[in-house]
Length: 331
Image 1 (cartoon, one colour):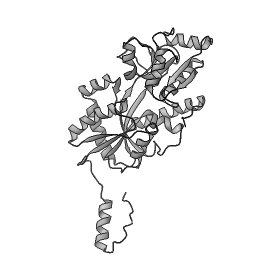
Image 2 (cartoon, rainbow, N blue to C red):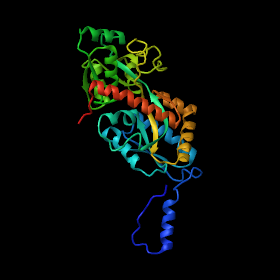
Image 3 (tube, rainbow, N blue to C red):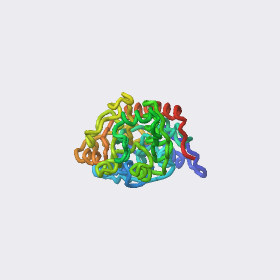
Image 4 (spheres, rainbow, N blue to C red):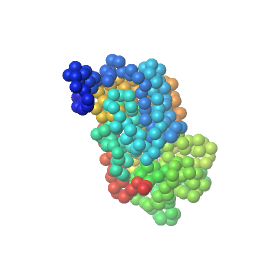
C-alpha cells in the first residue's frame, strides 16, 4: 500500500507527481529480487550456533543469487536488539533476522520487548533444529535420567542445575523436567554456557541442559556424561544415549533449540516465496546437510505457515512453564 509522505518545499505539480510515483513504486519485484546485498541480522557473537547456521546458508545464497549475503552480528539484550532492528527495517527483503526459539517464542513472556514476534515479522522458514542434551559430570554417581529422578524424589541429595541465564531454554527445560518428574532442583544461573559447563564438569553443579554441538566434544573427552537427549528421537551423534521421553520422565518431553529466518512484516509475499524457495534449495544440498550435522543441527526448510504454527505452539508451551515456575528474566 503506498505510503503517505509530506514533502515540504515542492511547489511544482509535476515534481509532486514524480515524488508520489517514486514512493508508490515497489522497491523490488520477485523477478529482479535480489538486486542488492542482503543482510541477515544475528543477535549473538560470531562463532556460536546462530552465527554459524546463518553463514552456512548465507554463503550458498550469495553464490546462487549473485548478491552478497552479509551476516551482521548485532549483539545485546539476549538477541532482542537484532530482532528489533529487523522489525523496524523496510519490508523489502533486504534485511532479515536469524531468529532463535528464545526470541520468537520465549522472551515475550519474560520481559517487555521492542518488537512483537507475531505482528512485526513475516515467517520464511526454519533453518534447523539443534538438539539439547542433559549432561552431568563424568564423575557423578548419577548415570541415567531414572537415577536422577529417583535421587530427586527421595530427597537424599540436593540437586542443582546450571544455565547460561534466567529464562534461557536450558532454564525452562530443567524446570519442565523437574515438574514432570515431581522433584525439586535449585537453579544456578551463569553468564554464558562456558562457565556453567565448567562447574558441571567439576561437580560443583549437578547437571545442565546444553546444545549437543557444545557438549559432544566434552562427552567424547570423558569430561561429561550424557543422561538423555531432549528431543523426540535419539541423536545420530549419540545413538546410545536415550531420549528423556524414553526414560519415562515425560512421554512427550521435548526441549529443542531451533533457528528460523524471518523478514519484516508486510514484506511482499512474492519476495517471501522467493526467499523460502532459495533457502530450502540450499538446505537440501548434501554438503549443507553435512555441514549442519557437524554442528549438531538437523535441516528443516518448512513452509512459512508451518513455521508460524510452531512459533505459536512453542510460545504457548513455554509460557505455561514460565508461569508455573515463576521464572523471571535477569534485570
